[in-house]
Amino acid sequence: MTEAFLNYLKFEKRYSSKTVESYKTDILQFFHFIKLEFELEDALQVKNNQVRAFVVQLVNDKRKPTSIKRKISALKSFYKYHQKIGKLKTNPADKINSPKIPERLPKFVEQQKINNLFEEPEKYFKNTFEGMQEKLLIDVLYSTGMRRQELINLKWSDINFSSNQVKVTGKGNKQRLIPIGNELVNSLRIFQNTQINQLKNIPKAAYVFLTKDGNQLYPNYVYRIVKLHIGHCSTAEKKSPHVLRHSFATHMSNNGAKLNDIKELLGHASLASTQVYTHNTIEQLKEIYKLSHPKA
Image (cartoon, rainbow, N blue to C red; front, side, top):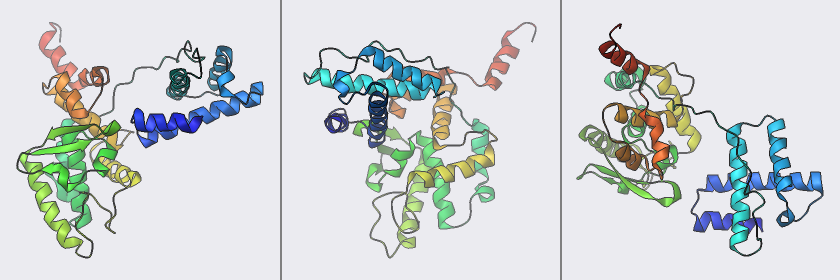
């Protein structure tokens, strides 16, 4: 029952393996709850009040609203799938409301601070092959706005040097093209030649970014590098790869890019996901205030 649903998510809905794994965890947690609390072995016999009891338990356990929302979404999808294949007439999770999540503005690094990182690279990046790769990694994330996993999966064959563009494979294996500037193109060319010389004992690399052993990067490696170097230019608490994605989108918006264009570059399915980047920085608001308010 669960396996068929997870295969549906993976192959028909084309959800990422990470999302599928999260849904699996959430559903199994619910199964455990109904067995413990209601002695129910068959999840298809569940009633609406039992789903509500599960949500109440999550709230009492002080789970984060985002976590509760995801679990409700997983259950709704699970039962909707069983409606679709004719195993259920009604969805017991259908009328369950998710808790309200306070709107949070995305964290980003100010444009000048990121510029400082690249204007004096000798201060922050070692003069080694590893240092060269780290600088390029930060540059690609900030210059394209791609996600961490998209960067890890980036291949040399995805880069079109003659037309200054990168093909990115995003969520659900959806592909998009992102333009890149001459400076980044040159950096990529130099790095590719250096990589060939540096990794002579390793067959020609398919992926742009590799470990010392010539293997594909792993998520924690990227996180560690980004955290280290964002720390050089920002005191912000959050220093994840996603902060560079937020910075890319925020700076594009602040410099006049249209929301729909940012949406396409980020690979968002919905414009609603992109609208959070229309906020102004406090510095910009101060400038607007000074110029516009009679008592400023």
